[in-house]
Image (cartoon, rainbow, N blue to C red):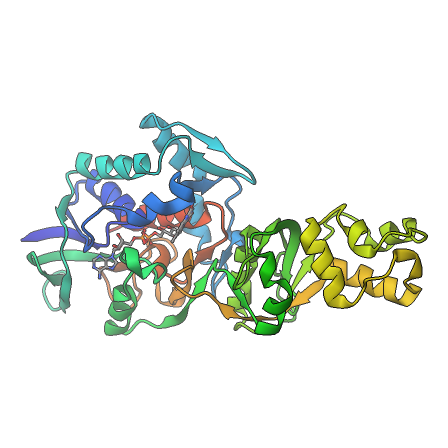
Length: 403
Ligand SMILES: Cc1cc2nc3c(=O)[nH]c(=O)nc-3n(C[C@H](O)[C@H](O)[C@H](O)COP(=O)(O)OP(=O)(O)OC[C@H]3O[C@@H](n4cnc5c(N)ncnc54)[C@H](O)[C@@H]3O)c2cc1C
């Protein structure tokens, strides 16, 4: 069967692209291998889908080319997506830090996107496994042939929207990277990102039993490369039985991975406070440091933290030098991750199709007319908080407007 556009992967980016291209009169086919539609959307945001972020900006994305995402993000904004959500009567709210969530269920976003695709008369091959993709060059226009378990389909344009590698058990596959390689496009090595960090056994021996303890912190990579402006993240951190998690840690994990997974991360345990001045104000306290720390930290954590460093005496008995070290450690507690918990626990995949091979405006491969890559399969990775969906919508819109 013949189409104008075949979209591989009916996730966030693929459905947006199909709906936009279909509305332009293109005959669109969506090819999806999963039996259920939009699994990642369904599990996102704890089942309520954090579908965008009001503060979306290019600086909130990691890529070898930090400017690549600008054009697509400018042409399809969070306001455009919320307008769509409102047209479908989906109620939503801002939770924190500009993060917009459905009031009721992520299933509403899936139904909305499916409805948009149907209204645009997109056709579906689902569930269909992709067996082979071939490009027949030489005619008036390039022609892609996609062989699937539901038959063979041809189209002038092929949009690859098969996502990243995170959470393989809900359908992630490396097809997008394989196709990039097949067509000679470079791929930045994929890595798990927005992912909990693992800690070494010695660290776990001291802190692992605090699993479940969460505290307010500012997390950063302690050794960002020279000249790199890597932001600190002020959110909750969580101790787990394997290491560290929580929003602040997930955010910083992407930068840690981006830098090659080396060096320690640093936690400011007293955000917004001058630790030196605070300790000086308590210089004559007869209580143990751990008890004092409970002003800011959970009790069990405060005790383990003080004990692990050997600061067990009453504050009044600690020397000025020790108190200086305490202040420094509270403002920059360095922890060396031993790795990450991998794709099984990662929200996204860092890396992907090298943006240098794609048009910023349309996401079309420069060297292969008619071939597009959108969404997470591209080397553009957003912060936690709705940024990754906004990239999926915006890149889907860009390709859907051109293909
Ligand atoms: C647990 C979890 C929670 C998340 N929460 C949020 C959140 O709240 N906010 C946010 O912004 N981001 C969130 N994300 C990230 C977000 O889900 C992704 O960045 C986004 O879905 C990427 O869109 P995509 O269309 O590129 O890929 P996907 O949405 O992953 O879609 C890819 C589609 O391609 C299909 N596919 C894969 N391989 C093949 C193949 N070989 N043949 C055919 N089809 C194939 C898949 O089945 C899937 O339907 C979360 C991710 C996870 C894992």
